Every structure is written in C-alpha cells, then in structure tokens.
Amino acid sequence: MFTARRTTTHRDHDDLLTAGLGLDGLRIAPPPRFADPARPTAVELRRRALWSSWRGIADLRPGGGFAEVYGGAPAVPGREFHAYATLPGAIHPHRVMLQLPDAFDPRRRCLVVTASSGSRGIYGAVAVAGAWGLPRGCAVVSTDKAAGSDYFDLDSGTGCLSDGTRAPAGTPGLAFVPDAPAGASGVAVKHAHSKDNPEADWGRHLRQAAEFALQAMDEALPGQAPFTFNNTRIVAVGISNGGGAVLRAAEDGDAWLDAAVAGEPNVFVDAHGARSLYDYATEAALLMPLAQMHLPDLPPALMDALSTPELAGVWARLSAAGLVHGADPLAQARSAHERLRDGGWTGPALRAAALSTGFDLWRALAVTYASAYGRCGVGEHPCGFGFAAHHLDLSPRPATAVERAAWWSDASGIPPGPGAGLVDPSLAPPEFGLAGLRRLRALHDGDDADARRVQAGIAATRAMPPRPGLPVLVVHGVDDGLVPMAFSSAPYAAAARAAGRDVRLWQVRNAQHFDSFLGLPAMAQRYVPLLPYVHAALDRVSAYLDGEGALPVDAVVAATPPGADSPLTAGHLAVPD
Image (cartoon, rainbow, N blue to C red; front, side, top):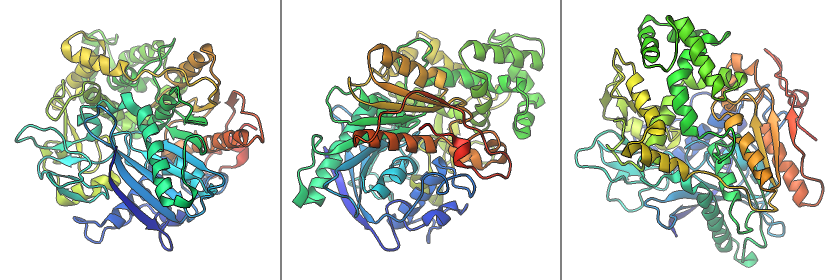
C-alpha cells in the first residue's frame, strides 16, 4: 500500500512549517533561490515548495492580520515521513506526508488529516492544517489527492522522484509516469492524464493518508504504539478542493473521523441549486468575460482587455450561436449577465469571479477537469487541448531544464504556469479560443461518446451526507467567485440536514476564494480573508471534543473590510463566539 518511503528531520535552522524561512522569509516576494537553477537539491526544492504553498494560500502581508490577529508561522521542529499510497484499482499513487512535531504528546493523541487545496502538491495545505495543528503539538498528515505538481516532461522523458528532484523514465520511484504514445511532446499533468479520475476518490485518499500516519507513528514512537483510529483524535480540515475531500471523507460509514471542517469546499451533491464545478466553470468560460463588461467598477486592465475590437467578433459569434442576444457588445454583455444570474450566480460571486477571468482560470479548469473526468491520457483530450511550454506567440516548445526543475516546487497542478501552458487548437483568430470553449461546454450538455464519458466522471464525484453523529462545520465566503456557495456549500448543508446530519454553516460576508490575492489593493479594500474563520472553526471543534464548549451554531458573519491603508483587526472579522 505504501511505497517509496523516506524520512527527513527538520530542526535548528530548518522546521516543519517554513523550512527555516520564518514569517519574514515567507513575505519576501522573490522565491528562495536555487544554487544551480537547472539542478536544485531536495532541500532547496522543499524550502521553495513551502514558500510557494504559503504564498498561494495565505494573505501574509503586514497589516493583513496573519500572525497579528490570527495564525502564525513559528518554528516547529520535527520529522517528515513521506510515501506514495495507492488505492485499490487506481493506476497511479497519490503522495502522503506525515509531519510529526517534536512537541507531539502521545498522551493527547491528535492527528489532523488534510488534503491540498486545488491541485497543489504535497505541501499545499500547510497554511491551513499545518499552521493550526503543528504549533499545538498535533501531527498533521497530508495527501495531494493524486493531483499535484509531479509533471512529466514528454520531450526530455523525465519525471519527479519522491523528493522533487527529476530523473529519467525507468528510474525506480518516479511519482508519475503517464501512458503516452511514442513521439508525444509537451507536458503530462497528473490530474489531467492519470486516467484515474482522482476526484471520485478524494475521500478515500484522505482515509488512506490517515492510515499511513498511524502506521508511521507506530514506527516513529514504538514505545507509545499502537496508534489507532480508536485511541487517536482525528480531525479533517481542508479548503477548496481540500474542503471537498474532507466532505467526501466525512461520508465514510466507519467511525474513523472525530470531526470535520471544510472551507469553501468544491463539493457536488444531488440537491436543489447544486451544480458541478465543470458545469459552472464551462458556463463561466463562455459567458463570464462578456458578462463582466456589464459590471461596474472592475479592474481597468481587465475591462480594457475585454473591450478590444478583436473580441467584438467573438461576442458576435456568441450572439449568432444563440448563447446571448443583442446587436452590440453592450447589449450582448447585458444578456450574458442575465443568463448567469438566471443560472444561480449571485451578484457578489459575479464580481469576485473577475479575478478568475483575468487569470484564465475558467478555461484552465475546464481543460484539466474534462480530461480527468473522461479518464483521458496524453493526446486523448476530446477537444484537442494539451499542455506545453510556450514561445512568445503561444506556440508550443520544449521546456528548458530550468523550467522543468522548478515545476515541483512552483506549479499549482493546473497549467497555465511558468514553463507549462495550455495548447489550444482554436486560440488563433478569428476564434480566439471560442471554438474550444464551446466544445468543452458540449461535453457537459452533449450526448456523444466523449460527453457521456465526461458526464459519468462528474457523476462519480457526487457527495453523500456525512456519517450520522459526525460533527461537520462548513465555512464559505458569500462572495466566492470560483466555487460559489450557492452551488456547493449551501445545497450540501441543506441536503445533509434533510438527511438528519449535524452540519453547521458559517457564511462569511465580504470573503471570496483567494486570500493570497488580498495583497492587491483593490481586493484588500473589498474583502476579508477566509482562513481565520477556518482556524476559528477548528478551535471551536477542538474545544467541543474536549468537552469545553458546544458546537458553533449557523452564522451569517458580518465581516467588514478594513479599507485602504488600515490594518485588519478582530473587529473587522467578527468571528462568531
């Protein structure tokens, strides 16, 4: 079940949370340097992966509240235990990692089990679970959910070893080697090309990570063994896709979890108002850029990009296809906005979604998830998409050794990113990508063989209610524009309660999906971070399990952004008691 096992020690000028960078080092904008950019060491890769994971999730800027109002990044010495874990029936393994602090108290056995947000690598939950659990003396075990940044470079024939360094195909211990046709070029991405549809197994990934942690603690602390589900408190926490994984684990009928906290979860249920990520992401990829021209007070750079004369032809094509109505771009924008509102998008979610439009996330999500749901291998994408490094004109080229070396530490698990972008056959004018987006949408609405495969993959990700008696607390930003609450947390909570389950929901006003983007002045003036509410939820759940308080009740949290040049305070957050 567990292979490629290795153990590392992190003390003195190193630690579990920041690899010795500390909060000041995490706040420095340039990433930690590699002595040899083409051949970084495992130590350098780990340090940079932690830096990248922190900065991709948390708002670390001075005055943003982190380490001032909530959270922190103290030095936590301890050991890490890494392995690959493979589920029965899966083609490829997922990464698991136990972080065991030296301050772990075997008399108060606490294990936090988590999954990386998005499609991030194994350190992708450090700001969520690690920052809360490790300073409290809890062990923390993570899984990358069979996604992550173990990109395989088809041009050089190299992949990632357990420690992040690269090696040729055929080397024992590679994390991901795709089934690719001879002569294939570009980049193979595990989330897209594993043929496993990993999202269908998110809950099983989480449980297997917990099983690995108990086994590793038996070996690390033999005098205190055995560590079991019955004698160890196990709390699951995660955000975004990690939050979805937590809710999928919560439905397990075996009583191995003691509580679950899910932040802004990507979860799909069979309930009124619920929509799958692929449904609303492909809808947004088609209509959101046009609809956002109808919204006032969006970033000028985005509005300028959407208002170029070249795109007027794209909007006209949408109108000619009957997807929107109107004789000019302004009327067409109003029509696109109305269609999205009719589909359940709220005003706050639409405005916050401008960030996803500006970073091309809708297309990136649609491409990757279509491949995953359809269990497509390299070169098998039903819409012809692929991944590769780009020339300046966006034509594909082989990645350089320096680009390949940084993928494991820097990549988010879903291109585009440095050295790995989307290859879109319809990107050239006059289509400007529209034909590809329509084909992606047709996989959701259509009835051909490719569409049925994708639809079956989506159906396999439906969540069920949590185990009876399991305390579950869900936290979601009302303004979330990437995983809108109306499509995910709200119908999940309603369906779970209808089934008699104990699910509590905190709805946080003026909070959106990406705390890390609060460093942008326009974002900081409008939104508060969500992470402090996730940490507060863990505090409340822990106190409840200790018999020191009741579970928190449902709440609509009236958070207020501090405004320009003002530091965030506890009063702005208004965390429920």
